[in-house]
Image 1 (cartoon, one colour):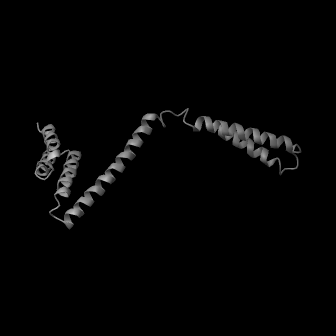
Image 2 (tube, rainbow, N blue to C red; image 1 turned 90 degrees about the horizontal axis):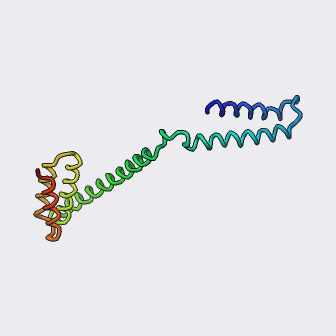
Image 3 (cartoon, rainbow, N blue to C red; image 1 turned 30 degrees about the horizontal axis):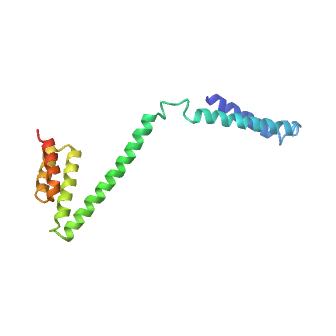
Length: 148
């Protein structure tokens, strides 16, 4: 593959010098060949460069994995922003019950991500005291799924 690219590049350079060297008189022929080799070179690049011949470098699994990583980074950034906002709300008003239970829920999720199940259960149990009535069942289910 690389040989084709270098070969066409060399031919293009030789033909391009045909315009400047006086011993090559057929400039129309040279111009036609330059255009032809340019199209052939672009065809090679289009075929091999579009990953049809390189599936192990640009596989769909790799593309999916990279997209999931990018999505995960966005979620982590949103998570950190939400945690910062809730901490700020609690600094401004320590009696804000809504911010308190939401922050405890986020901290429990963060503890789960770090692999600390006991800490996550502790956060959810303390959030259970502050959570509204219609969400208490959800928090109890979260705690029950984590307890051995």
